[in-house]
Image: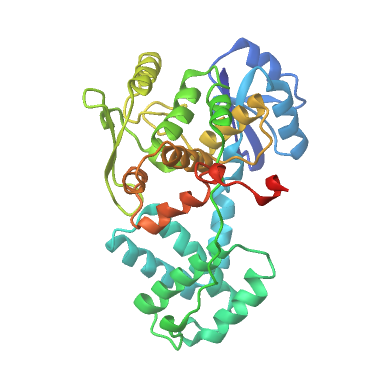
Length: 368
């Protein structure tokens, strides 16, 4: 299927929706149907006025003709980023920069650095105009009650803020805040979401597009995280040994995963068709990795085609892989290695969703 990308940008000082696609007479005729659509000679693409009705109109005219990637609409304009930076007090900007340098020195991943900086900034902006070095534990209690609970934010987010503040006040600021006494929220015991094999099959078979089908299949076939799939390179596939090498994943760990001949044949078909250069799965531009938002959109389309109403995420496929392995009799220790879990307790959660043993339990109701 053809691909269309929608993103926001300023054009002649005004916000516009830019519509990017390879030259195609049918797509050009469709975008001309939208009122105010025009061609930009400088950017070499079509654009329309940035308003909600135009977004809906674009989705409508391209429906069934092209796959529309609108994930870039969430990106902030450079001007918005600049204004946000100006609104952040210089003291906080400097402190966050020092935290960033410290985390880079300790080789934290880029995603963890971004998460911690955003979390620390949230707390520091909340206690303004109180100076950072005067922050104490009562400020965190107030922040949790008046910001996190009030806005119904998750346990995970609260944990991220605590982790970020522990680092910030221990490594950057010497303040009254006692990081050792910062309380985490009580742990949640949520079960992983698991799909049946029939549901997985219908999702993986939904796409006719070879690339889309291969990406979703590889996530389930190898229990991959979203980031692990996107960071794969052609050299990570060893077809002779029948293994897939995951490099520097979560926790900076490498691991190997066995892949079947069925998966290898699927990858060969995909490779012959797309000939990726650097990354195994590349985006619209050769040499650039596929975006996480686009991958989520691929799953969303598959769910629509398979008529599955559950709020399935890509991680559900990883959970389903682990659970189906366990139900097939695979030792929990091997599943831990395949998933790249540091602690066995993390893997043990799948014993609570496996139905293999539960099916042997007879309810006393049946004997009444």
